[in-house]
Each structure stands twice: as C-alpha cells, then as structure tokens.
Length: 172
Image 1 (cartoon, rainbow, N blue to C red):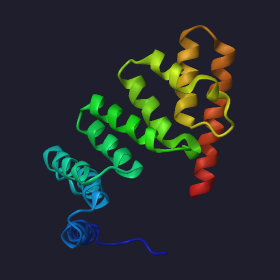
Image 2 (cartoon, one colour; image 1 turned 60 degrees about the horizontal axis):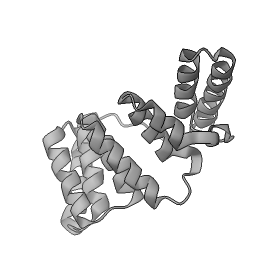
Image 3 (cartoon, rainbow, N blue to C red; image 1 turned 120 degrees about the horizontal axis):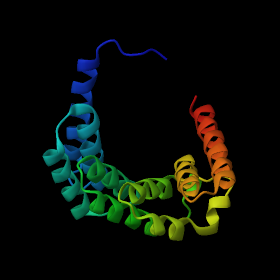
Image 4 (cartoon, helix red, strand yellow; image 1 turned 30 degrees about the horizontal axis):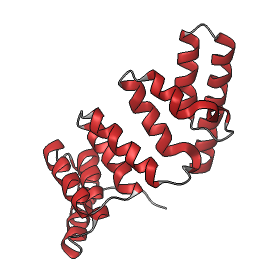
C-alpha cells in the first residue's frame, strides 16, 4: 500500500465521487449521508451544506448507517438534541449493536448533555459485557469516581484501556 502524495488531488477526486454517487442515484439515502459527513470532515463544505444533505438523506429513507452518520453530522454542527434523536433511532433499527458502537456514540452524546441518569438506564447491567465499548467504560469510570466508588472506577478504566488497545490491534 502506498500513501498518496497529492492531498488536494485526492480531495478533488473525493468531491467528484460523492457528487457522482448522487447524480447516478439521486434517491440514495446513503449517498447523501456520505456526502454530508465527508463534506463536513474532509472537504470543509460547512454545516449548512452538510445539514441540507442530511435532510435529503432522511427524506429518501433511514438506515442504521445513515442515522449513525446523521448523528455525527448533527453533533459536529452543534445540534446535540438531533444527534441524540438520530442515534436513538439507529439503535431502534439495530437488533444487535455488535461492539456497542452505536450505543457508545449515544452514551457519549448523553454525557455531553449532562443526561447521566439516561446513561445508567440505557446501559444497566450490560456494563459487564465483555465487549463493552471503551468510551462507555471510560465514562462509567469517571462517573463512579465522582460518586466515590474508586475501586469500581479503576476497574472500568482498566477495562476501557484494554478495549481501546484491542481496537488498535484489530485495526492495525
């Protein structure tokens, strides 16, 4: 595998591809969602353009992927309520959140908005799941530390670190 040497050319190509995907299939909810997130994160198109693409994506339908992408776009554009709603909708469509990825996103958003009781209600005894998302474990570690449950907090933090390293190993 070789790394690119022309970032600007790559970004132009990415812009072309995301626009072409919509041109070829204007009813594709995935294409609009992808363009929204890629535009916001890499192409610097801004929130107005990305939010407009998310509206178009939602009009043509919703999948777990488009709702999860939408949640990220809404969060990046400062609408945490809409980000939470989109993430909750994704979880409703997802029969099994393998690796707790979508749940981890939701817990992070709930934490950012101070909705701590909702975090505990959402996770419950599932905090003991061997594959619990490292973000959830880290947040639980912090919350339990605040409550004075230092031993429990240390256990969650240790598990969070272990899970984070496992993710790196799997991706590396």
